[in-house]
Length: 114
Length: 112
Image (spheres, rainbow over the protein chains, first blue to last red):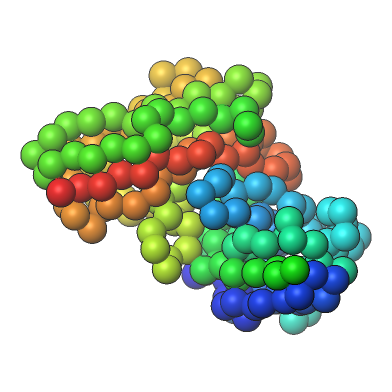
């Protein structure tokens, strides 16, 4: 079952903040975050592991709430280069938490304008 | 450049054609994947190969046939496709631990 991302889309002005959420109806072992710019390959941002620390990638950070079965991606002081579609991926149900069998959400389209 | 190379970048094929997509990585990874990305749909995992053995076949129709001859190469053989198979097909590779996957640029496939 795929994770649910919200919002579906967000438009920011440069310097503004945004939060993207990724929720699952099943227990989460880990959450993987990727960003895909238009016409390009998805690029890895970070992995959040159960019981692990909050992670950062430049000015992008993420948290993992096991109880809520949710991860949130925090984009602070957004830059034009942050524009793209953000995907979260979670281990496929029945895979025993295997990190190389991921199910992805539908993505959140982030647009940062000058 | 991610270190994962896919060819061709674009492919148009008829429903009766047979074609193959190629993926190559020299990152030393031991897991390789095929994903399908359609408009307004999430990335769909199709196949996973680990140490050259297929470990996942995600209910993919038999008109898609993967092949992994060695740890650096992955193919997706296509035959008698349908128009709804038109999509971006992405290859990725990773180690088998909790590490990132590197994606190729994808092959944009159009079935006519």
